[in-house]
Image (cartoon, rainbow, N blue to C red):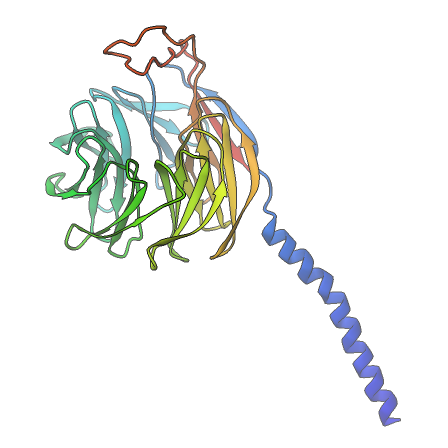
Amino acid sequence: MTSLVHHSRRAARVAVAAALLPLAIIGELAAQSPAPYHQLASYTLGGDGGWDYLTLDTAGHRLFVSRGDRVMVIDESSGKLLSEITGLHRTHGIAFDYGAKHGFITASGDSSVTMFDLGTLGVLGTVKAGAGADALIFDQGSGHAFSFNGGGNSATVIDGHTGKSIASIPLGGRPEFAASDGKGKVFANLEDSSAMVEIDTKTNRVTRRWPLAPCESPSGLAIDVAHHRLFSGCENKVMAVSDYDAGKVIATVPIGKGVDAGRFDPGTGLAFSSNGEGSITVVHEDSPSKFSVVQTVTTAPGARTMELDPASHKLFTVTARFGAAPEQATPENPRRRPPILPNSFVLLVFGQ
C-alpha cells in the first residue's frame, strides 16, 4: 500500500512538471519575441526648414522638434502643433530640467544654448557654448545641462536653474550624442575617433575613454542604467554595445544604413536605431551579454532621428519628401542636399 501511494505521488509530480514545462517555454519565448512595431499614425506638420533631434516632454506630453530657426512643440496624442519657439539659429538638441521648470536648446549657427520656461515656452536667456553646439542632455544627478559641441571638440556645462555656463570640458574628439546614468557619469560618442568618453559630473572632467571598434563613426547613443550598458549606432551599419563598468565593447548587432538616433526602453528591454534609409532596427536585450535583432520597422526615407515614450512604448520619427539634389555645391549647401518639398514635413508614430 505504501509503495502504491509513493508511486502515485511521484506520478502526480511528474504530470504537474510536464504540464508546467510548456508554459515555461512559452513564457521564455514570449520574453524573447516582443510584439512587433507598426505604424499607428501620420501627421502632416508642414513648414520650411530641415530638422534634427526630437525630444519628448514626458510631464507635459509634448514633442519638441528642432527645425532650423525654431523648435516646434507638438501634442503627443493628437499630432497638433501647439506652439513654436522662434528666433534661433540652426537648432539641434533639446533637454528639460523639470525641477527648475526650464528647457534648453542648442544652436550651432551661433554656438549657443537658449533657456526657456517650460510652462510659457518664453525665452529666458541665451549663453555661449562651444563651436558647433549640437547634442544636448540634462543630467538629473548634477542638475546640469551638457551641450556637446561638434566644432569645438568639447562639452559645455550649463546650470539648470540659472542658465549660466559653469564649465567647458575638452573631449579630445568630435562628440555626437550623449547619455547620463544619473549617478555621476555622462557618456558621449566621439565620431571622428570611434571612441567613447566618460565624464565625471562632479569634477566636469573626462575620466575614461575606450575604443568602440569595430564601430565606425558612432552617432546615436542610448543607455540601459539597470545593466550598465551603452548602445552606440555606427555608420558602418552596426550597433556597438558597451559595458560601461568595464569600459569595453561586449557585442555588436547589424542595423540599417544612415543611423542618427538611438533609444533604449527599460520596460521592454528593446534598443532602437533610427536609420535614414527609412527603417528602425529593433534589438532585444536577451541578457546583459546577449543581444538580437527582432525586427526592422519600415519608416520612410530621411527618417533618421527618433524619440521614445517609455510609458506607452511608442516611437516617433519625422521626415519629408525631397526634390532633386543640386548639381553644384554652394556655400549655403556644400553637401548638395536635395531641397525639401513644401509642406511635406510629417510626424510618424509607431507602436506595438
